[in-house]
Image (spheres, rainbow, N blue to C red):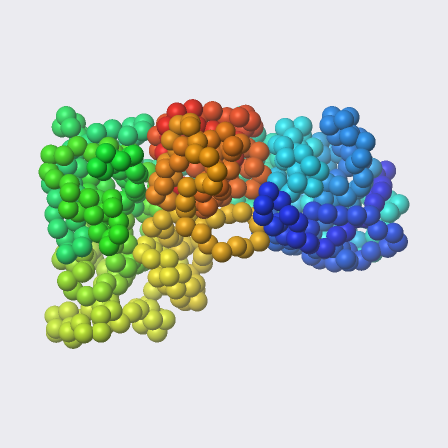
Length: 574
């Protein structure tokens, strides 16, 4: 019979790590005597990052004595003590290749259910002083697992662990972990995993995506890296916005994009080092030319050049269409909301809907300063007229904007409010696509959520860097991306397209992730060892070398920045 050897608890604390502060509860220590296990944790215990640890489905973390003995030998360590792996229960028995998701156990007065393997996270490596530990736990099939508390009660070291019932499908913790993180997945195991009600919702969603995610529809294969395209014509939409039409240099058809995607453009201006910028496509997906529409910013060197220095027949370097902010297939209502030049990707979506004479209800909501600075005003009004169930609302924020005329019933002065949105009758099952300044998307998204739309139905496109995912890192003042401190690198140029900076590679950084962090470029990561794929980033051009081979390579055109460095000049969508 399995036995509970140790109960380990610890409250979250701030820990210095690589020049930052991590708020973490990974430091656990054994306690004596009985402890009350509640629905969310054990008496005296807490988690620092509730997005990845803790909560009802991850209330108690379990690790095995046999795995301790394995790592002592594998790592050559004799200093490992119970709680070192961040676990709440250290047990003798219950190996990961035998315990199954959905198994139920009685320990002391409490009852538990197995919900998922341990989340791969850099903090276990930080605790053990072994940075590669997250990868090792998965590669060696020894992750440990989480328990949900079915019946609260007291437990203590020495308690027997009694199996109450086996989970359906008999899918072990080790197999479940491998199914998510390792290549060569078994389709039958994916199906079986989705038949286990006890599996935590996050893992269920991941397996649904792995088992049935269709390939993108309506998009042709693009080209690798950058290629020369010809400026077909330039149209001035407003005093500050120009549309640039691009075509192939040899007259061959353009690959079809998806409505909402963007192009990256690489320019060398006045002999300076090339810079990369990304602009949403504002053309119909099947148009005979790509159209990007660029607003001239007061101090924007690239936007000024594109508006005033570019001419028809000029050649520019363009990367193929990419991006996940796209109009999904479906049959439900649609909200297209934008502010200023944020209209560009949703204009492309509107073109797609209008060309199909889509019968779905569509709400078009746009905010502009005034009529003179309202790009695509006539174009969008005409497109909406082709839809059988469309509503249009345009808001002008300028205080001196004239009162709308009688034939402009769709025009309002001011900004959209919760009351005006409610009056539009937008249903709670609508899919909303928002693009514009961050403040606009935050406020509008919050209003839609208050109106009843679920967060997963609200899609947003950022003008610049994506929101960071840095689990456990305490907040710090936002800093604009910049060149790293210290001696200038001598390696290949690394361009961060969303951040607008290019940096020579330096061996002072161990990975592209560390280079991005040195530049205060917004990053996304969790394990930092090539396991979780949180850091996966589109590679617009160039190639990389993996310094630590990931357990599973990302899809073509993407790179794991946590364990790679540039093999030549590269452009990252960061």
